[in-house]
Length: 203
View 1 (cartoon, one colour):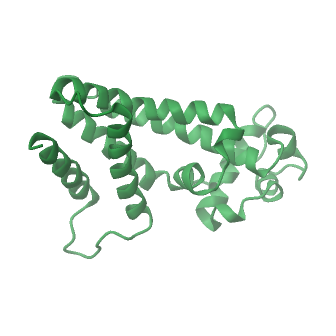
View 2 (cartoon, one colour):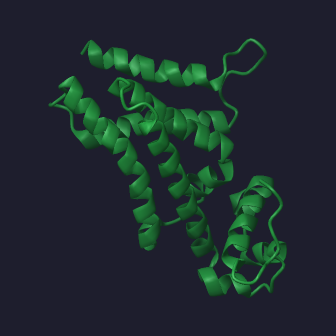
C-alpha cells in the first residue's frame, strides 16, 4: 500500500485507516496498535481512541471498509455480463473474491485473520452480510436455473464460499505450486469452479 497520508483537518479517520493498512502490509496484523497508527498519521497517540475506542475497534472499521470493497468487486463481476450462463457468473464472483485477497491482502488479513469478535460490532456484521449477499444472489440463481431444489441455499453458498476462500488463502500464503512452468491463478480459479460444475451437472 502507499505511504499513509498525514493528518489533514476533517480526514483523520481515513488517515488512521490508511496507516492500519500500511502496518498490516509491512509487519502483520499482530503489530497494529493505536500508537503506531497515530504516529504514521502524524497525530497524538490519543487521537485514534477518540475515533475507534481501542485497537479492535480500529481493526473493525478497517474490516468494514474491506467488506464494502469486496462486495462492490463481486457485484461488478456478477453483473459484468448479464447474459452469461449463471455458472459463469458464479465463477466470476469467485474469481473476484480470490483477486481481492491477492490485491488487497491487508484487508483480507484483517477481515478474516485478525481475530476480531464480529458479533461485538453490528456495523461490521452488516457489511460482512452485504458481501455474502452478493454470493447468495448468484447461488439462488444457480439453484433456480439448475433445478437443484433439494439443495439448501445456505449450504451451497458456504460450499462455494469455502472454495473461493480456500483458494484465496492458498494464494495469499504462497502455498500454491510455484515455478516458471506453473499456471497462473486464473487457471486454478477456472479449474476449481469447473470441477464443481461438472459434479453438479452429473449428480
